[in-house]
Length: 271
Image 1 (cartoon, rainbow, N blue to C red):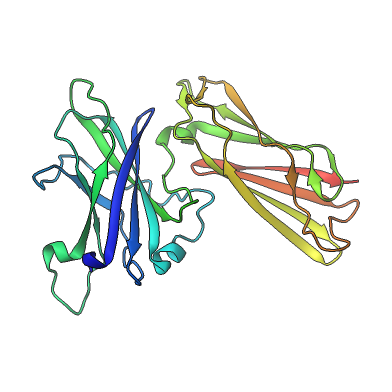
Image 2: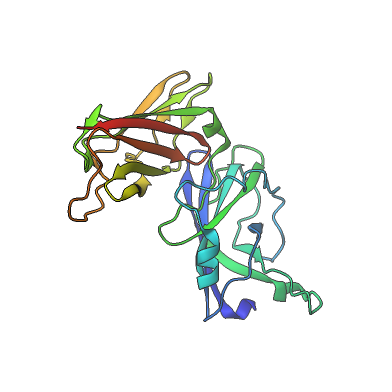
């Protein structure tokens, strides 16, 4: 029931509008929610005239693999993006629908959670032409925003040292190439996943990792047909067991992923 859930929501400016997150905490209950923030309300409780673009909800952020876990625990954040120009009423709350209870008739407000919303709206550029883009659920450290559509024009290249000592890659560098004729803004700052596969005496091993790209205070822009470079630093993949480490002569494979961008792959040989 909505009374069992504490909900708040907040937005922050990004290059294309604002990014938001709804935080939901259940009182000793799992969250029976399978759909995204459905709409925004003004101070009178009316729906804003804001279309919802749900076409990107199938693209899950790279580090957010098990969205069902946090919902089952009963503590989750759910992302959304409000893009474009908005000159209409102020949004004061976000609506998330609870899953319908098939054993009881629908009861209006009893089937939805209304989260108070703070933070800015997209700036007004003379007319309202904004869209609400729902994200995905996740825990406190998970990415919950789907990638901006423009990121589909990016391609990633991962570069590793030619050789490794079997425990640590000395460096990992990612280059994002803009394949379009229009500049692409890296906003919000992207989360990435970096998985490293290697072969040890006990079999194969996988080291999963990642985090947020090293973004400066101001959003970086990938020029039209240009590139941008991120230094991810040294990457350890040793399991830490006695005699551990990858076998000499074997190949270590790393895979780099950002939601909305094809996965990049690179290898190194163990000395």
